[in-house]
Image (cartoon, rainbow, N blue to C red; front, top):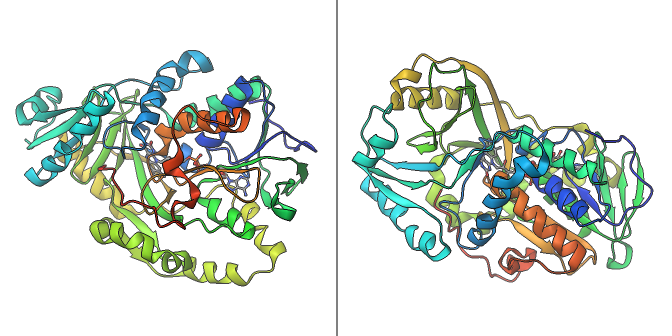
Length: 436
Ligand SMILES: Cc1cc2nc3c(=O)[nH]c(=O)nc-3n(C[C@H](O)[C@H](O)[C@H](O)COP(=O)(O)OP(=O)(O)OC[C@H]3O[C@@H](n4cnc5c(N)ncnc54)[C@H](O)[C@@H]3O)c2cc1C
């Protein structure tokens, strides 16, 4: 990767964060002939974008996201050629399995959206499901299936996008934390990094689960919370057991090209209560009440750390980013066991597979489960693309493209008004509408 350890003295635009969103924004800007600078405190794809399951799906999404992901999936389909890299993208479909009629009814409720936006999603009954997955033993009520969905390798895809951006003349600086965004008089003037100051009129915050902390000193209150999600990779199976990515009962899984599986215990996650949990409780309460059973709550050091951060002197607060080059939460062994059991139950031929590796990632979420995208009123020159709420690997490329258009042309192809930062302060936030 043609990257540098030294930031330039000035840049037309500084992108903070080398996840899939920041990397894609750099790539699409560079494609337009701009010369963006991307600053990453650790390595490209070091956090969420390199730790996710690898599902690239349209199905189940919030109606606001569907037009974007419709174009997004076509970008994915052309990436192998455009990036000149093997990112293991395959259009293998995505399947959500229902074990109850209630769940089937929820899946059915998404079909009108699929029809409205031309997504090839359909319901499968029990027999069709068994036909699609002959290696699966238990019988289920049915499922929601989108053949045009796909999967890709998270690290390979994100680094290939950043690499191509660099080839097209973007400057990629890694191991360099941004300490603060300077905007005297309400206008972006510079970005201060641990390795020097970059003068710039425009900044894109694509800092994943660190975005709220970066924005707070600017007086911007982003209601972003962070959950811990555990994943494991198994040893390879003897043969292909599923071509498609699967959301099953207590299981999210896909079989990789080497026939190993990525497995996770569905949407079961850990949540550390912090000061922001209380600050934004009113926004999260409706969604939390519905999904309470999916979270294991923890009260401990993260809460104390968040209190301490509130009273830290500015210079110390600004050094927090370089202390954690990559947020590497401890995986929850119970969730790994649960996922392995669920995989073995689904596919008896996978029952003897072992855990080859396990990891966890910190997912940044928003109360309405859709991201914050676009300019803010103040400071002038600041753009945000964050809060992708656990399904942003698939959305990263199209969001990066929208941010590149906004920065270069002042407007976007897709309507991103519904994702505006001000929706929370305006009281215009809707309830979460994605079903997966
Ligand atoms: C376990 C797990 C499973 C998931 N499964 C899926 C899936 O199957 N499909 C899907 O679509 N999505 C999935 N997601 C969600 C998806 O991974 C994220 O939504 C997406 O990667 C977010 O990308 P990002 O670029 O916004 O953030 P990130 O990838 O987190 O990137 C942000 C970057 O900013 C850097 N940064 C932060 N602060 C600073 C600073 N001060 N200075 C410099 N750099 C900074 C960080 O180091 C980080 O590299 C999953 C996530 C996890 C954790």
